[in-house]
Length: 436
Image (cartoon, rainbow, N blue to C red; front, side):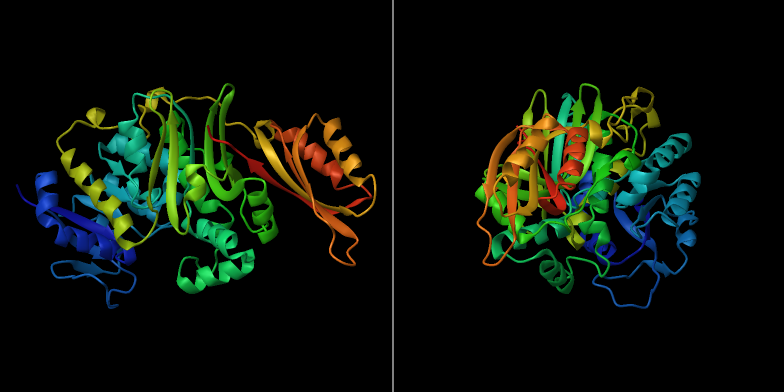
């Protein structure tokens, strides 16, 4: 059979990795796909720049629309990122009858519902394994390997930059800003790190995972998102004293009254498997009613780990060339007409335990007043740490662990605590999960 021609939009770090894998593993890939797969056309903003792959036989252009309009191209691989012009290019490629592979989590999270509907109309496939957790085949695992399970919850370390920062704060006792600057020097964080440290990148990925796990439409705008920039090295140390590690998690739960989707710093028991995922690595734990908890671990970014997922998608697309659209694996694991309309819960209706840090005057009766306020809102305390003040200091940190309570009760309690005469400044909260 004649080779499959691939048009690539973007041939940077990941794109070069794709070309290298296709060349290095050509025999294995053709045996698995049933046909040779080759990149015949590619767009690049700066075609003249040197790249870490061989470009012989690839027609390079600055115009990505020339790639999606090329009649010889059968599969378009989108690696340019961002929502526009990626969305326009993908829609045009599908209108031209081309299958699509993308690593673009923001695009799928925010426009996936539209893209999948258009793909169904055009009778083409959209594959997006590389959009979540780099080289970890988490989408295929949840969508296919666990398809006989009712997924009850999933939790993931799905942003390597945030995980690197918290790891260094834990082991080296350094502050957030210092580690962030180092991460930028090492290339783990962008010059503008907001997508990583504010949780936006993780929220995009969680949106996709939750939709596949629960069979719900993609709903990025309903994910509760918090970053890690308010975490101090003191918080990390106090968490350890209480038997916990702080991790930045994406969490999705199927509750009785809906779905809870949230990204935020989380205290996990020190011996939990996710607590021991360090550095820039990613890991996702999925709990199914039949299989129980399963863990998927590996490199969440990088040229060849991400390219590995892209190439796997390309092989899957080629395998399905001759299948009728209705016989292909559904994009979100569930057929479109059977997606759940269950609500995504507002954060105020979610129940968790809490770590609280506040600063209070070093005088008798303060702790009693704090516990009284919490009691007024039905919040019971599991543990308290009150340190001796430093010499000359008028205020002392108080650390509390609470039992599980609705977020709306905690919101009201924190508002009252911040108004007390004997406390000062903002009360810092970090949610606590056992994930059992």
